Image (cartoon, rainbow, N blue to C red; front, side, top):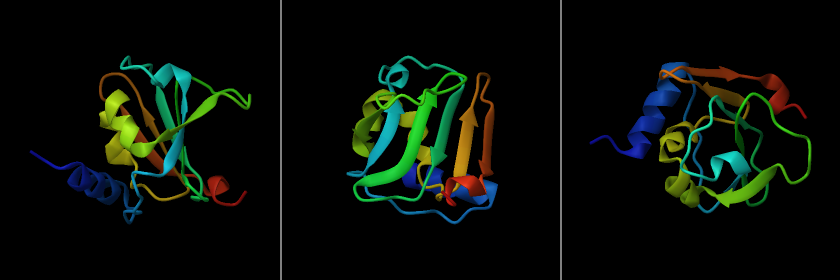
Length: 118
């Protein structure tokens, strides 16, 4: 069985990034529609620079996200295992990266410089 850490290294290597360490006590911002065990495609993730007790990750399900202040809920990374453990393998991607997961195992990962130059 492959460990989550090994999966993270494999994802980073596959897309040409150095793994970026994080602590599971840090928080992500996650949309309500992913706080279930149901999967809403596409799943989108983007990472800003970590700040304070946040990892910089924002993850949501569906085509778009809302600019409303309460769209993203704070969630400690270790709680993500309860809802979507399949997302953990992407969390070592560095700031400035995005991912998109679709149906039929579609995966896209890319760098977006705008995420780190805010």
